[in-house]
Length: 474
Ligand code: NAD
Image (cartoon, rainbow, N blue to C red; front, top):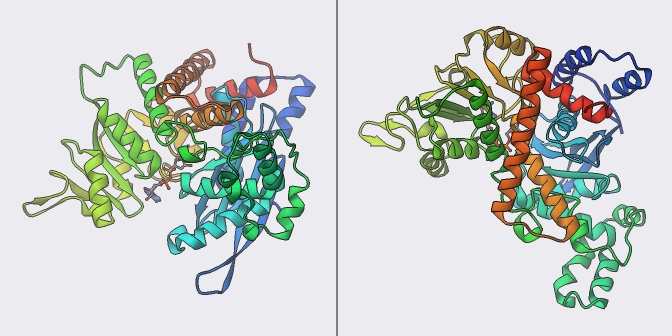
């Protein structure tokens, strides 16, 4: 284990935190102590993951898991695969997860993980061995009531499936198999895969001895260790699009509060990032009557002032490999009347709503003055640096903070965890109804707080979250 407080993300997070602390104005000693504790993660785990590559060589990757705080429940947060993953970023993301879970009123604490890797350079087999190796390295620190990871940038349901399978192998495959077969709940062949010992390392079996694995432990219970799984592995209906859907529920509510009537004028939207979150948010917005005029991914974007169809852009991106190849050449159009733009240009377009849905700090001191959107819906984590936040607020732009805007993902992840623990499977309608209610309640609480404190939505969200974590809220 090691820690290194460097670079910017965590400093930015602490700057946001300080603003909220000031507004709490508490002189109570216990509260002061707790606030001090919240300035650092409870545990930082750094691991080395040796992976046998397809050519027989061994390559070692660096992985992290930061367990920020578990006052409200088990640590909860995604696992990111990216070449720039570093401990500073993972700490910041785990802090934001703590805030996000509290903002949404979930019984979860904050955590985050990451591996420093470019997954696009690995074969599927290498990716699977890396994912299983990561789980073996952190297995003793996670579990349904300890820490519940999920997908994030460049990870998905398939990877969660490998991870949960590895976790089950490590923890109590043998006992689970015996118990389930004895109880005649399962056909022996259906649990045979659980005892495939080939993937078990000596360290993993040692770690397994530390787990509470009673004969009553069920497969569903163990599956609650990871969320964002595929349905076949115990995933929830609606998880894939939950972050995007949650963001749209929040946006609709904010526009209502601002008195913006969408029937009067079709609102234009630019979305930066076209992955799980960016694509889903663009599609849901477009389906519900917003005019999505620009989208981009890491290689660039396109702008179609009359509007574009996110599903066609996705089809084209899959065909050509790049969004910015999806425009007109002569009379051949993948996307009508669209032209190429850079990621920087997309952020500065004259649109009503800007949705950063890629990486951190894309809105910063150097471009904040040129942002034209009235509402910025932060679907990425930490897309606005503190200097930009202050400037945008001064100019009357509404920044809907990440801890609220993208909390739909962790909300449905928590529903998945609850379903696994209870051995239930809810319908998509049930999931979406609960998600909408959660998002609207969270938005209302934050809106009231910003009015009461005369501050921006981010600081108001932090105050709402802190009151819940400190147990001082009404
Ligand atoms: P993803 O890997 O599916 O997609 C990321 C997208 O961002 C890709 O389209 C990629 O090309 C693009 N991108 C990367 N670098 C870029 C750059 N410099 N400029 C423009 N685009 C760039 O990841 P995701 O799950 O969609 O996550 C996106 C953001 O949303 C992250 O900040 C993540 O932490 C946050 N988030 C995700 C979830 C979730 O449920 N997946 C939940 C909450 C927050």
